[in-house]
Length: 275
Image (cartoon, rainbow, N blue to C red; front, side, top):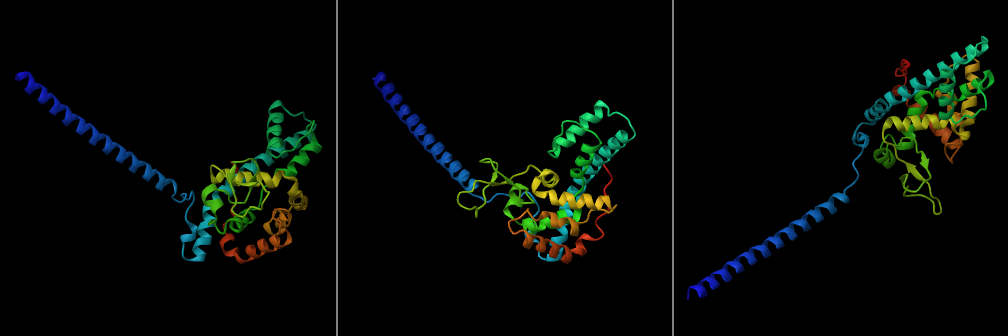
């Protein structure tokens, strides 16, 4: 009899434990489904903007000023770096003109600058340094700001918000950037993605100072330097004729924007000390 009661008790306990396990498994399964559903919701959310929401600023004047103020420090930083590079090359050129030989340290840095601006030479002498100086020069701040405003719709474009791309720069390796929704069939380019605003501005300036498409811009700037004139946006902007398929119409649009936005540009062009 005792054995029978113990057996029944054991069976009862076993059934209770089994029921508990089944309930627990059902609870875990339900919990996992909730996590999966939550993950799906997160994945379908819009990408968070990496920059301020300029489009939400109600007053146009405030939005323009905010956009320029946000981008300006990075433009000045890169121009400061370029000024230092240019000053170094000018000093090295003076050494050669004085009959002095370049040091190993000078050769090393000259090669670094030459590689940055895609300038190749078998030897560095007075003539080649002059050619490198044509590439190693600043981009007028107001031109950079206006072009960024034009390319991004005052910072509201998808490429600026998600990829920190303020100048519509392309890349050509699959997965290198963001695919334009209006990309022509058969085209494979993407809009480049940058890790920082600084990287975006630096890439844009390096592009203008090295790409063959902007040799006219560099020529205009060099002519102004030869006349002891500081490069200006309203002169150099003509060198951007190959920046857009719209060419002359694009230049006219930039010039119009320069004229209409002087109040946000004038008085904010103090030179940044060399870094």
